[in-house]
Amino acid sequence: MIYPQFNECRQYHDLSGIWKFQFDPNNQGLNENWMNHFPKSHRFIAVPASWNDQFEDFRDYVDIAWYKTQFHLPWGYKQKKILLRFGSIHYFAQVWLNGSLVGHHEGGNLPFQFDVTSLVRESQNNLVLRVDGALSALSVPPGNVTPHPLDTFQNNTYPSVNFDFFPFCGVQRPVFLLAVPEHGFIDITITSKLLPQDNAQVQLQIQLDSTIATQLDVHLSDLEKEIRTNIFQLPSSTEMVIEVPNAKLWSPESPFLYQLDLRLKQDAITFDHIQLPVGIREIRANSNGLFLNNQRITLKGFGRHEDFPILGRGSNPAVLIKDLSLMKWVGANSFRTSHYPYSEDTMALADKMGFLVIDETPSVGLFFEETGLAARFKLSLDFIKDLIERDKNHPCVFCWSIANEPHSARPNALHYLKEMIAFAKQLDSTRLVSFASFRNYDEEALHFCDLICLNRYLGWYSYPGCLSEASVNLSQDLDSIFKKFQKPILLTEFGADALAGHHAQPPEMFSEEYQSLLIAAYLDLLNTKQYIIGQHIWTLCDFKTAQAIHRIGGLNLKGVFTRDRRPKLAAHLLKKAWNPS
Ligand code: GCB
Image (tube, rainbow, N blue to C red; front, side, top):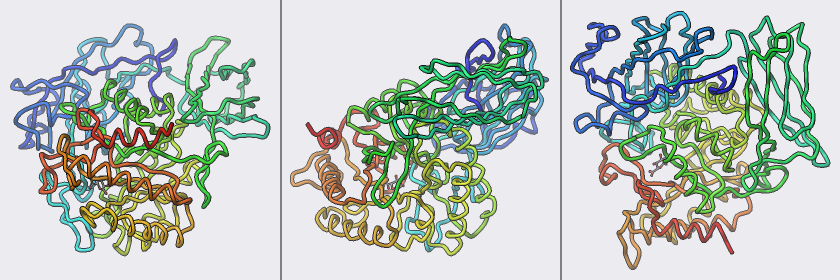
């Protein structure tokens, strides 16, 4: 799916703003025909943003709600193919345009679009959405599931979820009206390869739907020449290689992006045009480390959440800039999109600012066996496919994470994890594939990963308050895992809750001092181990969770910044540790 473009052939119109909104706790809307007669008693809501924190009375509501907006077709859209594109709606969405059902989509963090050319009018278009935020044993992530005795963590939360973040609902990313050429580009896949003597190749796989194209022009910025392909005998899928002498490579220190322009022409007139940034870089991992452009690299960064007061999980450019700037300020060069795909803006900005990203699917809290296994497995594969299709051209993505902390003690787990990892590798052989594990060396699925990602909480959930015991045991734990699997290890989570402004001497749990000391102890240990390729602190900022006995104020306080992005002691410590002068 090509990200919306704005040029002489493609336009988009952002439908974000204030929409009409109605909660539907009794599930009346379908019977009462709300798609045609939206309730007069409606309230108003901001799009994009989760609904939970916009009102005083429905914060914990994760069920059905309806949205409505009206729009006119912008000038110049009339002769084009018209699409409606949704960046993300959590969790299940049904869409009506002018009373006709256009389609539905399951899954909260990936984009989807519908061709509405035959339904759209020149003016007074009514767009209505029914959004069901409920999670179940059949959804990914699952929710409202009774924990299994083999599961280490027994969640008892309100709302009931199988993961540690608030299940924000609603239209959480922008809704676009797109005007695209009737027949044109369908998809582009860009890969790159380094060659000897600073040369490189950019490889393109282009999918077209065009019977009228007679020429394809390809231009990569900074190269003198334009490549022109005559396509009288048009294949619907075409491949080409661009040789790049003295290539400028992409890296976190120097995130250089070429610009690729692809133009489809008929009789010298351009009728489709796509512009994409291209970062040339190569990534590989082996037991000696992680290598970017043949140089060993150490990852410093964070697990994060898309989370901010009032917005919930709603995307907001200022919050995004703030978060990526804070990470640069601290000296980070990497992050993981824990525990779901982040906004497309995030990925584009990570390309530009230079972050190496572990791109994670929404498969968090996955369990194997019991009700709904087939449905969860199918969705997990669908989401791997959709995520790779969405993000495959981003140089920032170096690794796909197919799950966070799957409950893999259950007998069936190994088979399913193996299939999921193999599927990701089959779709993309140019990147690493892994998942974040909380288990020990008995996690057999680590055999299938290119890189071992471990989440560890010694000094917090185990050995609480005891940092030296935590270090000794962590050291043995890591050594035994490396010994068994002989693969590089990244600590994808470690940290401690700290209540901002709470201090203690001697340090104790929940104080800023204890959080700093724990992080410092981990860094000291990790820096002694050659097979460790990096450190991702859990987490960048405090974030909202469901209510639970261990979540003061409904917050996970492991942020090194507060939820309103103020540094705790640990942020200053990291800045020193990651920017040695
Ligand atoms: C984990 C999870 C993360 C939690 C974290 C914690 O292992 O992956 O989602 O927030 O622990 O703080 O408990």
